[in-house]
Length: 104
Image (cartoon, rainbow, N blue to C red):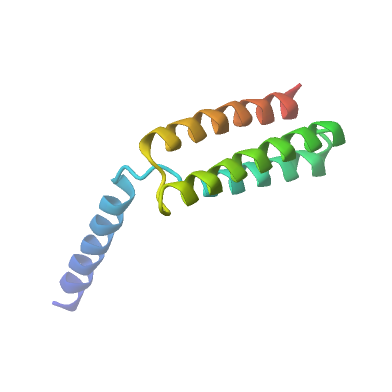
């Protein structure tokens, strides 16, 4: 009987975790910038990103984060869908640049 209860409990936990992961929550712009920063650091560490590329990527990240903070301030602490879309486009471009810098 205890084995059945344990299995049922495990099934419930797995189903709740699966449902939580399946929800469509886009990554926040701030979290995405942090992940990009880690990718850049990794590229600098292994030598695939030059100091000049690092400087340019860091400036772009700083500018995107500054824009994000300004948008939040202007919109009462929440990003509008238009602001979020704009930031996402900028982050997509930066992500592509990181990839190119690391692999060329």
